[in-house]
Each structure stands twice: as structure tokens, then as C-alpha cells.
Image (tube, rainbow, N blue to C red):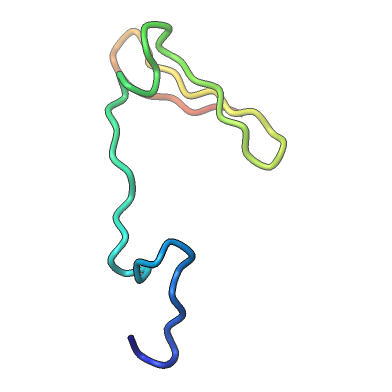
Length: 57
């Protein structure tokens, strides 16, 4: 590891970490929507009747 690179807390260098991949069905379930809390604000991710995804605050 180069001297200017710090290890991440999980022991894997940051460039080797891949984002978690999930399907929209796994996230939204039968309800077709999910509430995401970020910095004390709520966001709603939902599947439209046309099968698209919309994120609203």
C-alpha cells in the first residue's frame, strides 16, 4: 500500500471495494416503495406504474 494511502476501517483498500448491488425488488418489496433517512431527512424511493424509479424528498 502506498504511504499516502490509508487503510479503510474494514481492512480492504478503498479502490478494491465495490458498491453493494441489490435489485429494486429487493429494496422496494411488494409495497413498491422505501423510505430512506439521510441526515435526519426522509426520502421516498418508489416504483411508478410505468416501472421507473422516483426519489423524492
